[in-house]
Length: 493
Ligand code: ZN
Image (tube, rainbow, N blue to C red; front, side, top):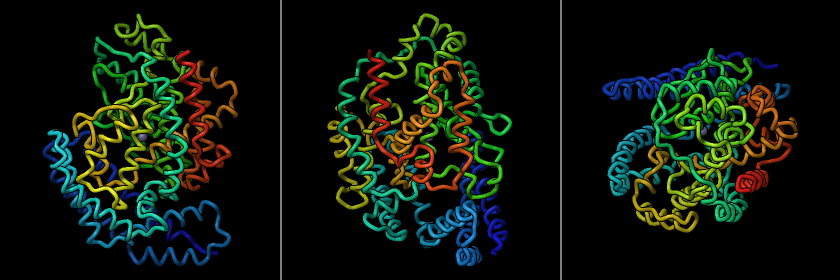
């Protein structure tokens, strides 16, 4: 019988260090004065280097080898701890220190260049840095290793086990049906336009009200403001979210539901996993399934708003008193092919992701040159979405991901959308009276089911394994396409 106490202690200290880094990041995005930026960058560099050293230490390597030699008889959770720690140890040690330093230096320069390029809508400012980032990312794939395609190594960083072939298969199933659905429903639902601004206080109060109704636990989390909404974990009992507030947009509602979905996942992890690397959502794709579930599947549904629309009207009479319920539901689901991924509706969203997947695959395998990127972008937007890209700012420069050196991240958004629909089917089997459950505002019933089935397990099961346990089948496009077909044909009537 082996003793995992040493390994647990080591990993708990690493978790403490990562939560400390998360606190610094939270502070930087929510509260830090502008002139604190330079020193903060130095603090990040110092602490990250110390953490990295502990993550690749021979001591940790030896603890892992010792534990792996005597795996028989370990419980599922202990095996999962070994798997997760081995995975991050290998990822960290496969990359030479000079490479890590060079990558982090380059991404910090690239982010500044990307911001400037986007402001001026001038791709040429970003191009040389992106070229170097692509070279480094290819090198990263070589260091990490892959079976078939170099892009596999990068995909696996964000979604364990994901490959280029799997993503290609997923889009092969999605593309034609999605294009057909967009053709049928684009322009058939009238978007909402607000002439009266929403007060910021009112938006914050309503967002908080929705979060409470979902079951976000304010004694174990908080809501703040930031330019880009996000969710972060500072400890097992400290899961925080941010939201943004614009005067004439409903982002405050859907941002809160989205980040709330991420936070429910984190808050729902079993307490016995506290201070362990398993105290975390299992992958980006599964995480996104939880946020999209609340934002779209629940949050843009008719029964949900049967409960909350009267309250919305009461909170904002100038905007909603004269708006009919049906017009509201159609408005929040309007389908409009556009240029910007983050503003996309449920039908067009994954076509934006498909474009990024094809481009990233091309860049990493070398079939697409960075210099040809703006042209390739325009061509694909014309072809898949039927829109003309007028400027690089609204085109190839719109997302921050590449400036972070994140290639392989985008497909997890589509995985999240597909998984959300699949999980919704499983929920409906559990609760055939789901429409009434939502209309009565009994969101606890939904949350508790998700908690049992998904949240409580943290990272114990692999993403695919978890999905099969919850839904009975691996990730598939069918449930998502069926969900869209039923939803939009009902909406259009
Ligand atoms: Zn998200």
